[in-house]
Length: 279
Image 1 (spheres, one colour):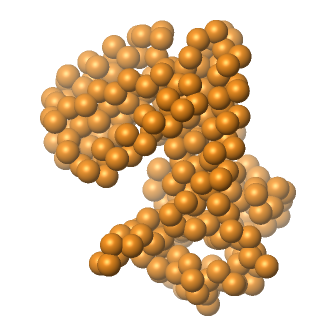
Image 2 (spheres, one colour):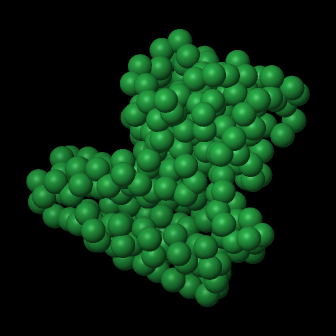
């Protein structure tokens, strides 16, 4: 029987636990969120993050700009870095093309990098040192653990090599003693490769790409993709309906990975506050 990995329900449990942890702190954690431009999806994401933060007891302060010069944005980040009352800084991506995304993300204090995108934190993840972990892969791992707590010796295929999902996901699975293969658009014989995997994490941004004949019986499938079809419905990168019965466990789209990404952002913020207040 296939286990539906309900990220919405797991995120609710995570948020309830975070709310209890926050009650033990001397002050509420604070998250600064920066939104630039008029991307409707980004505006929705930021609003959802603000609402979720408020729900668990995190103070959220948003900085919204229709446009901003690079130097002014860097000045704002520098100010937030120096503010002891700010525990986490999130710059909503994607940024307008005129802004240098790499420079901006690197300007964030690594201790306040609750998105886990700073090169120092990515490097610490690679060598196994404690650091903020990118929210989506961190949430994916918690979903995988719902299906199987011990991943030792399993073969995991991660389809996608972005810094946001694919690369940190591979590192997290290596930490779990998996044998990890990272696949991408240039990978040959991708369906055959997937059929050898006990765990498949898909983050390629192409609707319903992964079919049932790509999977071995009893695979755990994590679908990071979210795509809007012509009929307005949302779907993932996995053809959920045809793959469901083949899997031991699978995430739905929506209510799979998405809610966990926000929950892990909140967790990273709380962890940053706990570390600061302890020190």
